[in-house]
Length: 436
Length: 91
Image 1: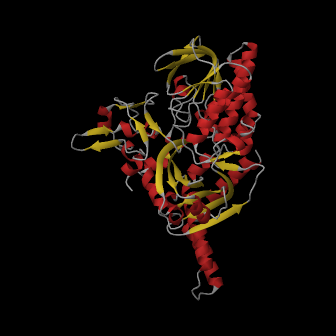
Image 2: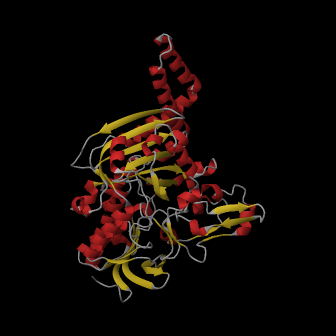
Image 3: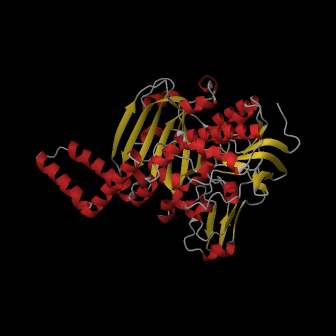
């Protein structure tokens, strides 16, 4: 193992999460010296996500991770539950995909494992160290300043997470607005394996992902989730910071309300709380991407707002953007050129990858979702449950009368202008997603 | 289960000094005091008796929500020192 002795190295990566580890290991594998600086006591100790990781992008960095890494369960069931006050409609898709599965993992274990692998492959891991600022000389980033010392490098890769104070320091992005992030709170609840398998209809190490719409978040841009781990379930929610602030809501009270919903409560009944946590999720999307590169610097993962919020993807974007940043650094090192022009290759390669293409596809999503959150996340959610209530209730009223009343009420409750605006929004979104 | 019970599940290594430094004079003028509701760890509490914002920084989960919603934009926010703050084992 190499030591980080003389305060000068080839590349410094700030942040030992999925983006930073991917960048660092890519550089080490090419034979260069790279220092990965993590502020927590171990990689993963400050990280929180839903969560699931996806096998295909993971294999791009760690081809054998499925045999070696601390994985919880292989997800076979995806459930989408629309909750209103005491009702729910659940859609369930089940398929055991062993080709391209997703796995539930716990970041505290998984990121720590990834960082260990990175160390084995030559990355110099420095933990318990906060980078306070970037060092700049002649408009080029030349290193970092920690609490104790200054360290110099040809390239610095910022993978310092959603709050990226460093991106802000060098003017790569404006102040984050409340509508550009969601606040997520999560509880990991201990339950034994048999109980989890019974309650979620699973066998062995199969897992289930629940996406929860509505409930205490009705009308707000927010979502709940449940992931099954080996011997615990992770339950949480993420809600737009703007909505929480506007309505004066406490995030943990929303989660308590979600946990007590009649559809959810039986799933976690009798479980013991192992850990409570909170984290911000970048939600700004394509329109809020920061400047991604400059002389001697690149930015990847959450720090670059790379989250696909419709598909709940984040760690895969982080890992692939980290990998591309790493590859760009390797090219720059080969040429000894760390200029802005040389590192612009990072953005070009990102644009040719799914990372930027997906972010671009959904560029209008958050604007429309914010404008119409009351309808799409509130009114229609209620109406879905209302429809099934009407359809399943037997009350000796002729069916034609019931159908007509449902349609009449649907239009009347939501006046024509609002319906028109909703349709307009939906068409605009579909157009930008599917056509251009 | 109270929020204190939830926070009790976490491993903390508190610092002696706060990494959250609002301009307390500006906090007095703040209308919404939104930090007192939005914080997932109830770090901020308004004391009517003292007419002052109380900061339980040792409970901080380091999410950054307060920094972004602060109405008066008067919060100096930084990460705790490398050896301090919260540790998530199950994040």
